[in-house]
Image 1: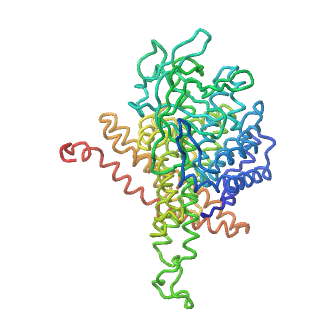
Image 2: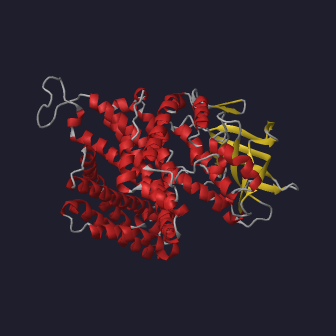
Image 3: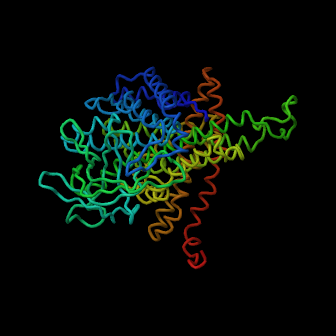
Length: 594
């Protein structure tokens, strides 16, 4: 049985000492939320997923979802866990009041993702997708469909999916062949096949509502001719659901490396009845609205699985005795010292720990920016929108990369035990490995960052990031205790500016130069963002020490900041060298020699 304890103290630190979310709530109109309520809800939700979701996680991996007679059967415990989730009202709490919710802020919804993913990622993706479908329906569907579907999907009584990929096309969605044919009653018949559909079928809910990309007759070529359609598994007949499927079928589920509890389906639509969502030929914009939210949720997957992997490796390490401290025996009464005396074990554990703490801060910041983008005044919205454009691909790519790294380090820390299923940690790596692929691979995220988001609006997005970073650096320049954090941050920010200019200049003449450096640039960008956040966290801890309010937590956080700047941040030197090296060594390599 794996162990897990929600990082509540870390969230309290981020919520109240770093970002002051109570002030954010008051400023943005969430007047009913005070510190006590925010902390209470965070704790209660975390305990709920520990008690209700976590017990079935291992069976979800070992038994998995099964396809029987064209129906997907969920692993043992999943149906009961989902039933309790619906009855609890937790998912609905983030929905609009007219749909039975509390319209809780997005920073809280973002924070809900982490413990949910740690406890049972397979169930968490059903929740994330359903809430994403709720967002699209409540914002863009017809009023009739909002009334019919929004509240049920928001509560989890019905679930939702997003259907993009087809057998012949992945990222290039302009090639899709799924067709939508208009009907006299205003509906459409949808015909086509979608693959890699997460939770495309299951028995957790009575109905599943699919968001399907398809093309209307005479639509423009490519992605400009794609529309979005709402296609339920079962049609409504008054207050009941039809006993017959809406001409949808599952022809297979994938046999995967991990995430066995989540069925990845081949989903067929054979003249299925659906309804247009939004305007004709705006499907890509609407799907990306949903996908960007899912990309942030996917970034949290790296954090959630990295955190539980770290916690279990640490628990194992505290019990494990092997060898002696190189500077002399520590425990004379035992045949060997605890492995925490070994520098390399500490390196691996601390790197995983600091990865998680840093990406948690980034996820929290992004959650607050989402609220500001939604509810702020005009200037606040403009600033938040620019930052979200930049941070979304970085959060998705960087956090999932370091999440896999953290899970891998946890396995390595445990040695052979980590590789064995008995201890449970290897599942976290296998589950985490899909996250760098989902919602647009991390290579695509890097290209989006450097090829679109950085250059968007004549570089205004990047300027909205540089202003607070450079302002922070200047404010802390004369503080002696901040030199060890502020100086490397300043170098990293200067380097980011220089690398951006290089990529823009060289990439304008040769796009291969830009593309070759994109992934390393995205990682450099992520390291720089975390350097800023770690410096902010260090400043708060230094202030706490100065005014006598520091606790052991503050001391530990300062120590974590030092680990980041000594162990992770120096990677930027090598990343910069690879970016400058360009593309020629890659593109001139003879194909015949591969």
